[in-house]
Length: 339
Ligand code: SF4
Image (cartoon, rainbow, N blue to C red; front, side, top):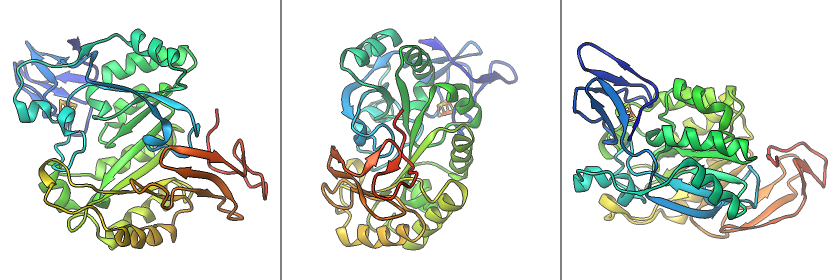
């Protein structure tokens, strides 16, 4: 347990958390929506600080980050909990553990930021990735680890739902190099309210603009859920916003859904649906990929001359016509980060 960052005292012993856009107002002895922040006598505490519930060496492509240090390994960690409650979460056993099991204690293996950084170096990872659950809800641990990681020459990446406040992002921005921001159903309102318990997703767009301002590398994923999150018009609205406000070169990943958790009654996303949405996204964005279908629309091609830049099969890659961030075939400057 550690005193939280970014909260304020309200009247009496009430406190307000300012880490994510839920901005929970928490009474004494109460918990925030994420169930890992507690008001104890008028002070807000993070209950999951250093409680590591998942820890793996992953290819960076698994995040997915296709344009950021391609081919490196990311030391990937999570603490339990989440500020969303997605009925289709693929990591629900660790993200929804408190909501579902009503645990009285916060589970996870105790580790320090130094231990995480040492492990990353030992496994020759160039990146630490805060992932699997939502990094915003273990912000203090991510912040301490990221700061130390930078001192040791490592980079940091978040895989996030983008609900982090602009203030929290501003606090960690100088240690944060890349973010994968996950949309579900291209921002469909009914899906968010009914199946994720998220009343309003508009703050995610503010966060994306702030990430751009802070020069954090951004890749965007969109989970395509059949029947309830596969609307072509909504997808087109999302990709147009990305092209107009971020860049047409923003990497965009359409992810195939597989039945999970409370939505295990739905079928996997049909390949034809993914292909249809891919073609719509390609009208506005230069780098569109399909995820969770190995070997299918995973390659990168130069947006100027269409030469093959990186060939991919699942998490295996072969760099072809790419030298740093230049196309070897036509010399165009390309949106890839190599250092
Ligand atoms: S991080 Fe948790 S406590 Fe803080 S605002 Fe978000 S859901 Fe509420």
